[in-house]
Length: 431
Image 1 (cartoon, helix red, strand yellow):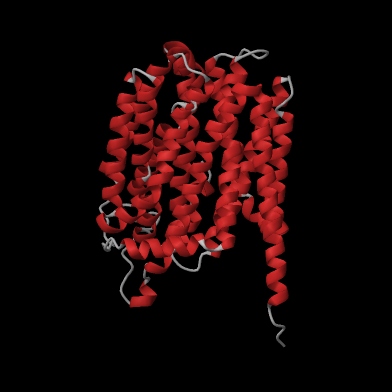
Image 2 (spheres, one colour):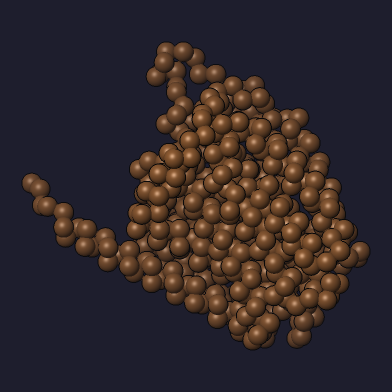
């Protein structure tokens, strides 16, 4: 996925002040740097962790039509195999961030991957939709330890000037895992069914997890903190009382509602009439994610030219245009619509998540974790509501849900503009 989808920018800002440089202490900086000892091992380890995390998290999304057919359930029920995983991650990312402060980043990441992989090997044997959804919920909760800990580990163990590159490699793993997991499952399922496809992802994740643990250097700069729920709750309460942060959390959730709904249901549309595409081709549709990687990387330039709110308007408009185009009965129009939806989503998500780190003046790690929670809640809501709407009114129903979410993004952005103007009017004029 994109840098925005991991909350990397927010975590980087949060952790950077903790690290000291040789200029601060007069002691040579022993943290890792490109070309130095351990850097390549660390980069590869976190890349593989990112691959495993997002391949597991979305392993059933491209397989929903086959799951519906095998287990005899509607799209709205099958979609819970996605919503349960992202919902579990959303609920546990904040507690996992606190555990990593006490027990260490590597420990939490290793335990998270171990549990998620073990559950992943059980998923293919789920006898019913209820058991499958329960296993996916546990898997998502376990995976919450990765985004909660990875950027903190990098901020502590890598020199500041190398952090962007290091985090970029972890983000690349997220994107590769999310995309390849869907593509691989699509082609494998076409030949041997969805259970074998999910099992293949589980085996790939086992290899990634073992390599991660063997490659990741032991932390040298981690200092354990105490678990102080009162302090954590106070920080969270302060963030949730900030109107701007709340708007940004809601914008991220609404963008993800569109994205989650569209990509959860698109398989049903493309395998059905009038397209009738085979499962392997449908899985390959997720290569469109590469467009999102590009749009997320250009979000900074958009903000520089249009401002944050202007960039959000453009991202929302692009997403809405894609939703309208996807209503066409022509496959090229549907694909173009998916390209625009993906580009608009990733750009808007990048703008909103980066704004969180700039807005939060304290507790930025918790601010980032709250954004990730909202993001994955949006994913769960989009997957579920989008599938219910598809069951009730076809693709038009799913598109309608997406357009309502984009209307919410525009409304919140307008409210932000008004609040900013009111603040400017209240500020005293100084000479």
